[in-house]
Length: 535
Image 1 (cartoon, rainbow, N blue to C red):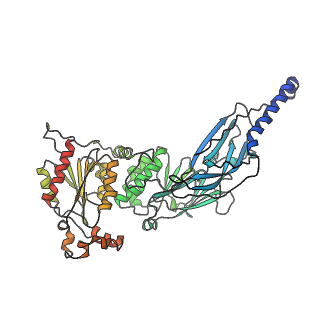
Image 2 (image 1 turned 90 degrees about the horizontal axis):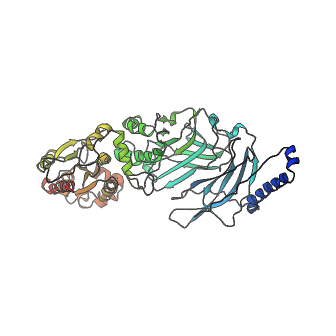
Image 3 (image 1 turned 120 degrees about the horizontal axis):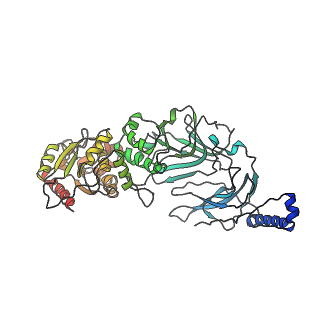
């Protein structure tokens, strides 16, 4: 709910003495109209001002910026800024709770040549009893109204959000970044003095991940000359995005769900005209995903932690936006979708296949291609050749491959397939490269993987327009039966191991377990995949 405040147009004309004598009562009438206009605009707001300086960034709070601009047909004061402060109530999404916060509003122009009376405000619910006290400021046209390089400074508040699995802050105006002290400053008189600490990695609440992420201090409302406020050494005319390669970077699943997809969501709107400022830089990671980075930004990434200069930008986003779910972009919550993201990947890596093969009874020579994801260390198939032989008898062309850091090669291999199968693990994340209507078969080991299997791959596959099949192995198909007796808790009661914590679960079921598929039991799954390709 919100009120839209409108101001009537103010007309003002100036006359020479000669004109005044000539026009007589006409000049007097014009002055009277000017005075009446000012009275009409400001009279409702005259009175004591109630200010509540409290800024809340509770979970789910969304601050929305809106701009109303009212044009004038004649010249108002050439350098006039009308500013006032008001108490507004912001309503959290999905909640009846309100939090109060004060806001600075501005009416006026940032350049002397402007003939527009603009009104910038943050859209919220303004209390009925709130009164706005206008303050008229006549600027002298000094350079303080100009940003670096002569660009007019934008007086816009930052928007800081904590949403589900991430936190991020978007700032506009004179933004200065000091990599040595890990600080981002918004310099300007018309902003609130506030401060946040942000870990720019999209896995909020995960202490283990964030323990490897540099924390950044975000401050607004600072002034030139304040302690810790440095002059710009290097000005950039494009926006910047600050994000971390700490956390779980290097694990293929987390590379996509924590960084690549959130980076796409955050930066795509800039169409490449954005610079990436990377904290906790990882050269190996950057090299692995260099093609994606180049297609999201036209500029080389900056290792901001090691920069000695103070970098200045007109817009900075600290942290990455992401969907609360894994490997997901909900189009109802975002202007983008997983369909668009997968098209972006196809374009980035020049992938040819857009749709899986469509089998027909009239063309039995056409054979679908099956990819068996191989693993060397853990959760590997111990009878890969037997699986491949059985699949060929069903009519598949079979490819056996292990994924590596060569993303272009991996993308090409997977995109050429119609069916991909593999044991639960990060390698299945490469389903993002499968063509539409392809089939993902997830092999679920023993140990209580059902929730992980569903959350990490089954649910995300739906948003990628893939078909999903699942095969849960029996105890006899796990190599853990060779390491533990049948009555051991590892075999008999996996829940007891899980209660010992993630490290205990991981050490046993992720790091010690391989899979020997029962060929006869698994055969119907591959047969079902062929049936789906006929549909």
